[in-house]
Image (cartoon, rainbow, N blue to C red; front, side, top):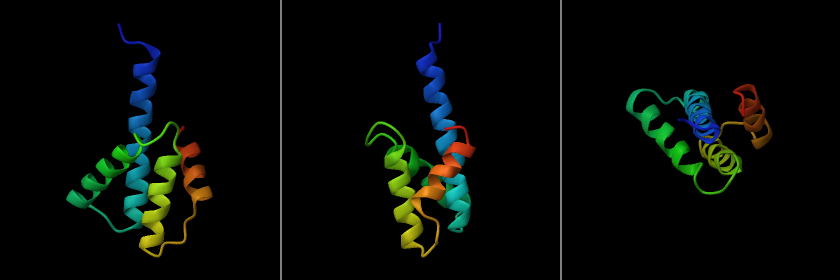
Length: 83
């Protein structure tokens, strides 16, 4: 039997995948680059509880690519994606 934690983990993985695609598109990623970026975001989520590790990772990537999207906008996108 599958418990609620497993469903929640699956929901978070899917949210992070969609968040990575949202961010990756803004950085011009596609194909293998996008797939690799999705994995990087997924890995970042294991650094600490909650989503702030993912927010920090994506914010740093945006800054590195000179994209003016801050942590507040990333958190807003997380909320839009259901997280």
